[in-house]
Length: 76
Length: 252
Length: 222
Image 1 (cartoon, one colour):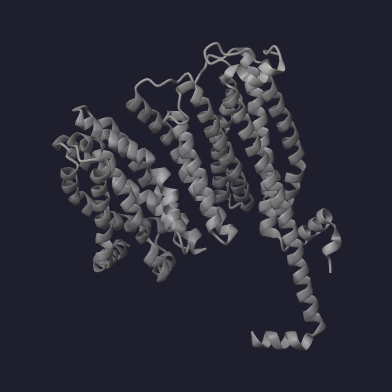
Image 2: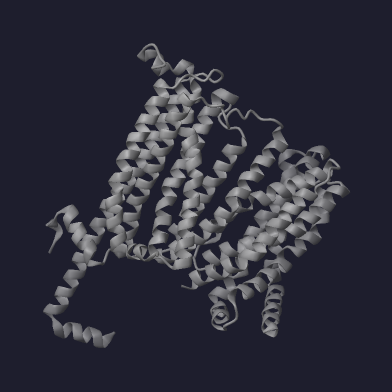
């Protein structure tokens, strides 16, 4: 340990503001990018699930009323 | 010879690879960053000229070095994608862009915070800071271009071309700015560049560098997983994945 | 083959001259931006001479960004670009022709305009000669590199600001070397080194850009 006590360590020889600001902002930035990536991951999985559920509902509806879907195909 | 690589061009396999790799990058990366920072902050000897303010070096230099390497890695991925038509290479490229921009921002911010006690100003048009700023613009350009396209396949290719144009420019920018700097300010204070560094100062720096590199790799892998899902979300394997991760309560 | 390229060349020139106002607007913009500097900074002859080269080059880059889209925009939206790409001619060569036309219609007038700008900003004759040389060597670089970004953004509805964001950082080295050449000329120093570097960048762009533009256009056409 280069510092005599904890207070000295936090004072950083008078450069506390600059040193702790640098380390703090860097920590926040790195934390943010990890959290953002994780949150996006979750959101995408949810989107995937709801989209596929929707697709499944559409398919089920098509199967339930085959006449309707045929007329749709003829129309399109 | 390269055949073993080809399965990873398939999104599902690439996803599995990302899942496997993520813990090996993330935790050692965080560990190294913590060790490097604590060692650098508390145990490395003081610089005799700059006092304790020099401890900013333990984040500034790794982030400055890796901001450039990440951009280069992006360009390599883009080249692989364009030449061999690998879709996953474009995904890797765009996964690297945000973390690269964040690292560049860190290099800029810590440079400014270091500059204040050393130069007496938060911002000095120093050669290194200026080229980091331009590098940040290049990153933001690639991200903005990617975001502008609806079709992410097309977006990846477009952003890839821009990353390649940028990487040709990075060395030119670097040297032109350095040259411009010496032209306009004479001999600037460039203690910043190479403090003749003692081994007990160097070790924590190398550890922090390794840690940040692993951390960047980890974030890249995380974001690459996202990119793969974004383009494949109608596939059955994504459905199984979502069901596994979120629980099957949404199922109809 | 040659005839086809000549056809594209003639057609583009004719189209450019039919839209005269679009041709003149970037030049007017350039003139106005340059007028702003003495008003904003002060009309001291020495001040103007000091900032002059930088001002002219920055204004040239900004005004070129305004007109840059024109390289491919109309051809993209009316479908003739698609026709060119289906014609079987190498797309890179067609892109080269279009870049050449763009340079002729937007930067040649700028070079003709430059004596007026030099007078406005109190440049000496030596500085003016250096400025002309940097413009001649540097503006083709703007067209070539700009065309890559235009190729990428041409399919987007609102590509204008994005184009500027992409291109400004890429043009910084050119700005540095060009202004420093004119500064050297002001001090009666040799500036061949700067010109050589700009020339080298231009050659690099001439070798690589047509292929990048061709790829970019293919991406845009999807």
